[in-house]
Image (spheres, rainbow, N blue to C red):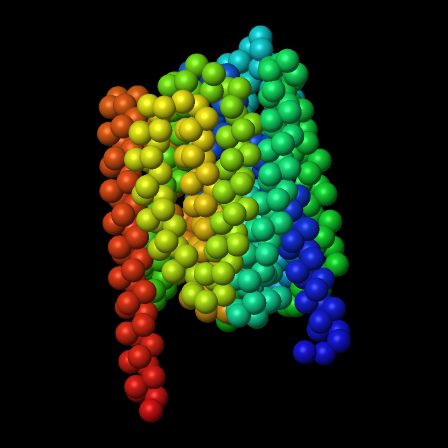
Length: 425
């Protein structure tokens, strides 16, 4: 590697670590597993309404991912779209802050309904930026260096999120800011943090993407081509199935905070502590996942994550019988799982996606991850009807199944490689 290549490599690494650092601090201000459910709970008691908001938060970008990827695949350069998505998310933070400040106390219904607009903007911009982000990193870094960068980025992001947890702990400490001032200031910090996070990408020199012969095909033709891609790529089909089953783990994460609120009277005072414990889990686990990623492929991390997430619902049931502090162990385990997901799933997909169709694979992956849209709504409904314990147990069983399927897929991939090597000799 020449001197100029080394400089560009360091520039790329700095950009992603910089962005990951400030993005993590920013997202701590609206952490989906602690702060966001607590904020919505301040505005409404409806778990179904929260389920709809959470489904939009996670699912809206996935629904539109095919549209985004169809447009982006015809673009040689994606960085400008990455920056556009970041600034749209920043604007959504500002909108939520304004709604919370002006309507949170006296007109909470107006605030919560306006959140549907801001959460939708926040989510679709995340999907738009996410495809561009993954494509740019796929072009600028060789395969063998991606998992390591994700692990390094995750470490610094975890440290930033821990700092964010300290901020949240201060904002929500009894005797400091009261509602809605505490949430408004938190959201305003998120607004500024995302703008700062974007600065690292300005110096990244993005190479042009290879253009496919069918890059000008219509959106309808593009969508019709999806079944053919899935039919030809068995690894991709299994990845889609696995990620959908893994969505059961994501579905449950915000409900652990709501479960604490329903179980412990003083849970709100533990909000900052729970976030810090969760972040501590991501910091500690980043070392472990980084070590695993240097020795094993990304799919191994995914499998471990599924088994770990299967433990969390059962742990929540038992720890809810103790006290709010011991219940924090749930958030420590969540930190391990969240970190593993970030280091595992996306590199896993980048490993199996053909270079010239990477944008298409990213779009298909998002749109076909339908359970991410459905499950939060279903989770809110079924918890309201049947209670937490039964749903927690069912989710745990599904996650054990997904871990088993991930293991089966690993064996299938090994057999495929051995067959290919045999044919080439």
